[in-house]
Length: 249
Length: 249
Image 1 (cartoon, rainbow over the protein chains, first blue to last red):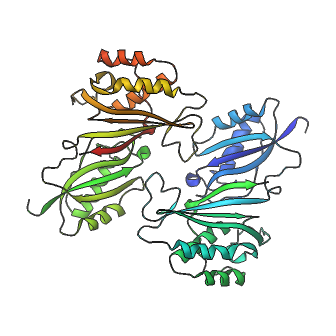
Image 2: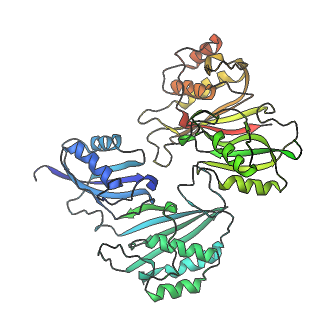
Image 3: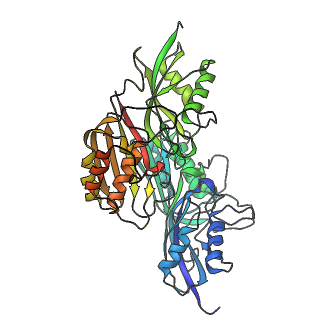
């Protein structure tokens, strides 16, 4: 295909109103909207490749994707065109030409996710973007102790989930950072790792919340991790608290 | 009515999905939702009285209202009951017993509004809560100079609007504070005054934005204010950037 250029783009989205990242027959996914917009711009069906999926309701500050298109103008013009025709909940933040070998998923060396928690009742303008605990309180010291259990290379099968589509992923991941920050009644858990299994960030967050609520101890978390199989002991935290913060290359 | 207690309550709302504060036949207003909830709690039609109306799309960090109800339990229980049955966009933040003579509107001595602006494109999770200027830039020094024009006691008819329902308000208001704050590409205009005419905060904001864009000078604003009648020179800024921040008593 002569004249095709590869582009790398970064987008932000409010996951509330979309059925996740990944294109699906029913549409209404972030990928579907961006592909529809690119089809209009390029006047040709254009497939985009994301760094990975995000579940329905999960937000992204900086999801990365790549695609190829026939575009002879400056990339800044393509960025402007891409910005104007998307739903308000999706925003393309940056766009640049990419190396031939670049792949948003396979070139990634790691990802950062954040999970936002709120002790009490989050105000209306924040309630879509964090998980509110109501009157329950979290022991953030216990959460920090349990967070350390995840650090390093492990088989994370106990915190993954079956996609139900036959796809499989290497369950061995390197967790480089798991920090629990508290600022008054607002808490944030930062996860940085080589990769994440399906529902893994939400499952680690849900487990740390259970530790914060006194339902599990840090030792329990170590036992669950070592068990290397998914059990009912692991809770998946609500999607709305999760943010894909950064993809590393 | 024996056993009736007067309560003062403070509520926060995301104005995006409501048709403003004030009850109307079509419903879907903040007042309608709170009154419906109180009717369920008290098992009697209950009228609430707000500090004033807010337009469709305008947000509130702390709108104040009062009402009377037959309630023999602690106010904290009423607050809990009021919190649980409202749409996610409305949150009752505080509630206490009020003095017999208290009236949310007539006892108010002043109000603070804030108008949020964004140079560039606000991210999806903020785009409902501020006015994005896209590629246009604002001269915030000129805006500050024009803001000073509003300070003190004036006839604000030029920045008011007709409600269309025959109601009239004294156009003489005392503007105690009009500050323009810039933090990088984020701007905030703070208005504090004895009272605000219908659409007055949005009209002052729209005028200051026009000054920031170079369409009007601070002297033009002084001329418009002195003219004491509404003309096409005054732009009403979009509702979504406006926040009712505080009501003073």
